[in-house]
Amino acid sequence: MRKREKMSSVDTAWLRMDRSTNLMTIVGVLILAGPVDYARLKRTIEKRLAPFRRFRQRVVVDASGAWWEDDPTYDIEAHLHRVALPGRADKPELERFAADMVSQPLDDSKPLWQFTLIENYRGGAAILSRIHHCIADGIALIGVMLKLTDADATGDGSDPVESPAADIEADAGDGDETDLWKQLLAPVTTAAIRTIGYSGKAWSTYLEIISQPEKATHYAKVAGAVTADLVQLLSMPDDSPTRFKGKPGVAKRVAWSEPMPLDQVKAVGNVAGGSVNDVLLSCVAGALGAYLVEQGDDPEGVEIRAMIPVNLRRPGKELRLGNRFGLVALTLPLGISNPLARLAAVRTRMEALKDSYQAPVTLGVLSLVGMAPKALQTRLLDLLAKKSTAVMTNVPGPQQPLYMAGARLAQMMFWVPQSGDIGMGVSILSYNGGVQFGLVTDKSFVADPHNIVERFAPEFEKLLLAVLLSPRGVALDPVVVEKNLFGAADGDGHQSPHRRAASGARRRRKPA
View 1 (tube, rainbow, N blue to C red):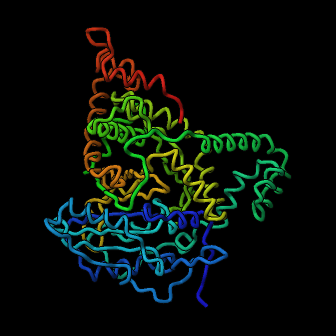
View 2 (cartoon, rainbow, N blue to C red):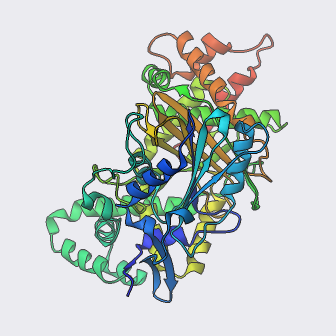
View 3 (spheres, rainbow, N blue to C red):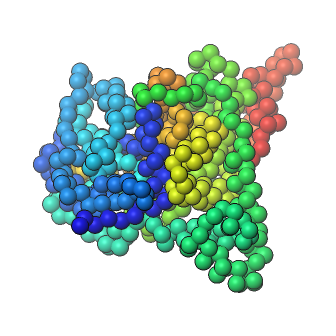
């Protein structure tokens, strides 16, 4: 009898999110500076994925739930393909190929992953990867991809990378879920537990915790905060109507930027008082707002909500497959043209989210819906999708050059899937001293995502200029910035468009 393992409830939730209009597949592109020997690449992938058993297991669903089962016909050649791009084999052709693959479902009779070697990209090569979200989240998959690389061109793909078996083989399962419920369910009342109808490990954990009265005050505070964040998530109004929202179709479009210097992004954040993430998300908001203007839409007062993944793994567990992240809802101000005022708004809202329980709450919700009937999961996710326009994720990659099957890895990018009717995904990835933006959009919403991606660098340059021209110590004081950089008012005493946008944002600004 073939070995079977029960899929965790969180991973089951991601498995069941698949729709023809939004597949739950994480798609990545690795751009290599030189040609790649197919046999060497095949040997590297086969040997170095061997310790990750999920890549040799298919998914089986029956009345008792979803299971991982060893694939008796597993063959690496069913998962590794080779193609040549048509025409000039340049970036537009690769973007079209990647967009087509985003919409192609994986073969569910086999392990849910596939690599495609593109042998003629820009005189070198590229590798497009597709891995289903139920196998792992972005943080874990970056670790997997790094196991396929070497520090120099001499790496021999015939030798598997040495890694502690426990770090690789252990997947997010019952142990982590028990810890989660200790955090989320222990503080609630017995009546609430019975109302939810949850039993087993969570119930035992609850009885254990309430036997320690010295912790009652702490758990009461946590319970109140968790309840408040859950209510806030479910009661958020639907997101602003923009051309970025609607009913998605099957066809997608993808684009990615050229790398920006990561050290410059860090320097701007240090001077302006924001994090690297604040700076990058502010540039995303500026690019989206500028695109609306180009399309003839008025972005003044427009704010969109983005769901941002938050890694909840313990340190040292980055190679554990499965999904171990929560989501926080960030409201991005698209109508603020003043780059420093926009950065200040993003920073304020991100700071408010850091003190919330939204991330573990959403992970707990996913765990619950993964155990619930699929119809209930669909209704709940559709409810959350109405409240969001995009999924935006920032994954830190290695900061030194890497090689794959002897070829130098020049760039790497990935695109996150969107659940429900969400039609936009923004990915930010840092690698080898640079940071890149990737964008996937529904074709019916945005048919030309490259026109958004091309605005990221100019938005950062505006922010950099504003920081350089600001008096020291007041980089994030929008009032001073408007006076010194944009002017307080025009000759008739009316505010300039820049000032109006920033002033309106200050009146509206509140934590997400």
